[in-house]
Image 1 (cartoon, helix red, strand yellow):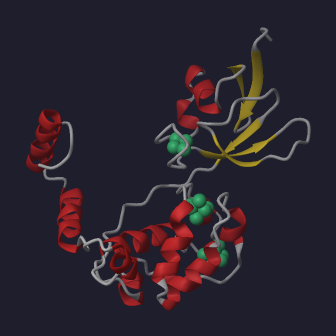
Image 2 (cartoon, rainbow, N blue to C red):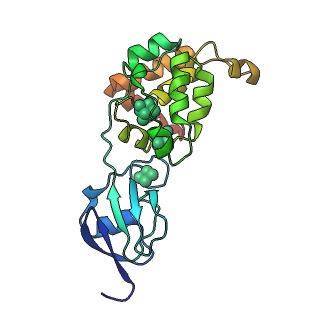
Image 3 (spheres, rainbow, N blue to C red):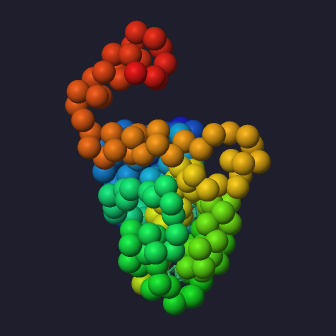
Length: 224
Ligand code: SF4
Ligand code: SF4
Ligand code: FES
């Protein structure tokens, strides 16, 4: 092996990597970019979540391939979580509308696997139970630190989709007209504007997109 390089294994395949580079960059350099999914490449989106085991018995675990530098003998196991289409939030969220959006809501068998798997220490299972009770403000708080790595969905045998529901609740609360935190902050609810924005995002109207891009280019900010 050349000096300044290490050998790691990704899904059982050996990969030569430069000391100091991240797992993702090593994979790109080796022409194996498809081995791990990527999104932001900045530690935010969680798309590149992997499990890691170290050669010397050092504790491994869940990590982000776009941030974690390679180490000699490191074994990397990708966590392939299929993306699912976004579900439109509701400006008047309640248990019924959450269940209509996610019929999986009541499938939870309280096994606790999602909570154990979460790298952000979010009480995922308890939050699913809060969703069933309509405690949406608490659910929104629970998921503030969610990086959407998808591990809670990956480990859920009952396919409950906890973080997708958590995101739906957060988005819905954000556009709700009946949001106590908005009352306290003195901010105006953005219900109608948010609904228009969601309509735009879901229809993907090319004319509207062009108009917005043009405005941004001319003014250096959004606001068409
Ligand atoms: S892993 Fe699934 S079934 Fe188990 S507690 Fe979490 S949501 Fe419920
Ligand atoms: S997606 Fe699930 S496991 Fe990942 S940070 Fe969010 S709640 Fe935790
Ligand atoms: S690619 Fe987004 S966190 Fe790694």
